[in-house]
Each structure stands twice: as structure tokens, then as C-alpha cells.
Image (cartoon, rainbow, N blue to C red):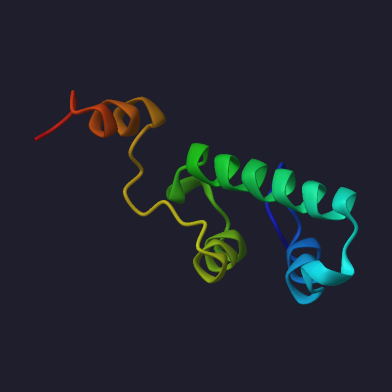
Length: 84
């Protein structure tokens, strides 16, 4: 079971199993937005706050934040103002 505020595992699986060629433009856009939203939620939620099931699901889907680094620190690092 996914954590509150996260995309359900059945939604992710259903989206992944249906080929894009069989999806309408609206479905594709919805899948994209849900995926981006879930990725942001994964980044904002520290690993230590995730349930075991959510950590496993994130690992499988590639939505894992292993470092617990804040978004601010990630932005600083990306722009060259963070840790060297």
C-alpha cells in the first residue's frame, strides 16, 4: 500500500503496462503529471518517514531518495553553490 499523498501502486502498474500507442493524449498527459507529482512527493518525503512498502515501491520505480538531502541543498549543489 502506498503512503498518503503518493500515487497508488496499482495506478503505476496500470500506466506502465498499457502501451502509449493505446493511450489517448489525455491519458498520456495524466500519466506524465501523476508521475512527476509522485516523484516530487518521493523527494520531499525523507526515507526515514516512508513505510516499508513505499520504500520498496520507490526502489522498484526509481523514485528513491537515498541521501535525505533537502530540495534546497539539491538546488544549491546543482547551481554550484553547495558542497564541493
